[in-house]
Amino acid sequence: MSELIPSVVQAVSGEDYIVYAYLNDGTIRRKDMAPIVLGALPGSVFAKLADKNIFYNTLTVMNETVAWDINGDRNPRKCIDIDPYSVYEWEIVKDPLENEK
Image (tube, rainbow, N blue to C red; front, side, top):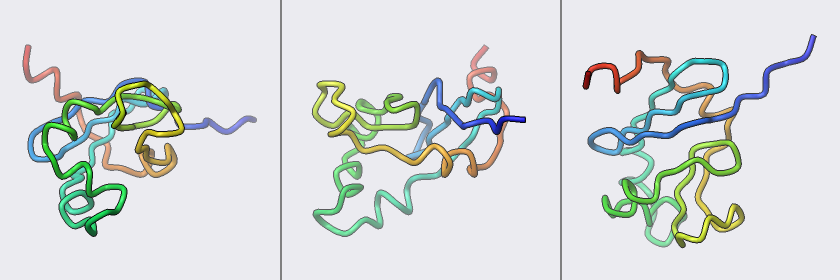
């Protein structure tokens, strides 16, 4: 039996640095990134994401995981991304987009 390798198929931002990740197993995962982003040391990778415009406008899926395309050139080597196995450990939630209907 083969093990499922988690893969993010969609990433959506919520309010106050919340990220929702839609995985290939059909689950939706949620993470409050505020402690990581706002608590980042100056000059560290996540410090760039404290700017809400950057956080919300560059969130995407790259390398089959949650990522921020900081340079805007879709370069998978220059993005900030989260290990998909870490994303898989996030809290499972209902689809937040269903509340908008």
